[in-house]
Image 1 (cartoon, rainbow, N blue to C red):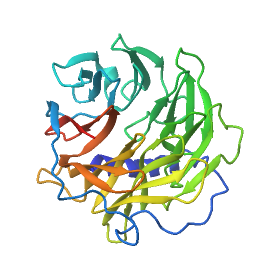
Image 2: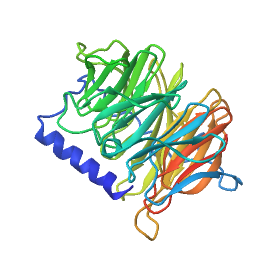
Image 3: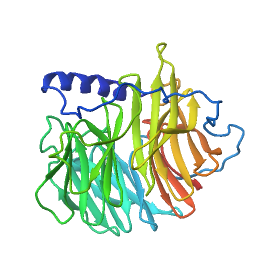
Image 4: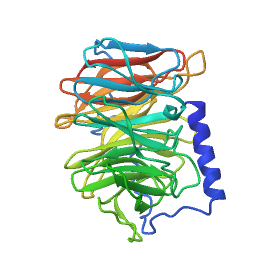
Length: 364
């Protein structure tokens, strides 16, 4: 894990101590059977096929690294935090265009797209911006840290539907109309990653290592929001980004044993709650992000240890069949794959290396 990410976890612990604790659900179950970091075998598929040949294609490069990524089907949008820019290129490649620039666009780690609308959360300005078809970005939510003590950093998340944008911040899951309006509290807790479904919104609770759900209208008046699954114990177990379809929530994870060795996995839980299922185990790697379509889940990982420059661990992009659970490696030896987006028959991802940042694509 990058040093700044490890530092982020330590800061989070200090923040909790200094801000009066966490407003978390109270009906948490005892620790279940450990599923994070599950070893291959016993019916758990291995994460990817190391012998698989792959052909990924470079769309753009930046020595300061790329971060968030999304696609509207015509263009790939991505962020270069070191340049304080939101960029786009045609999906088949071509000249980059600057969509937005300036200090307000620093710290963009999360981008999402639905149809022609692309939105992103910028921690540099604590705001959420949207563009439709590459139009001039508009500020949809200004100053998202409406209840918390801290600006939203890389660890927080954002998603939207046809009417509202949802985001996580310290101690709260919030929403606001896409057309502008008052911020509404959806749920309390320590939410990190979120995914907006057809009728409900899902989120992970960082310190409880749980997945929760509630109606899009919110459940702030509910003391104990619906718990879809408890997956482990903090700090040994960390939940990464999540994705959802109509039936399941997919969670990228990593588990650290007593010796500090990490093992990642992709876990699926029923959207209405039920037993978690490990779709793929990744020995020696950590799961960091996931995207899903009708047939496959796509997992980004990074390997334990660091390259010689001490900055960017190697990582992989893996496709896992939702029916057979067979997995194959789309790309390996990637320099910290960070964000992922899907469109048609293609997958796009960013490599966040601060010495060799890349925007990549490959056939699914």
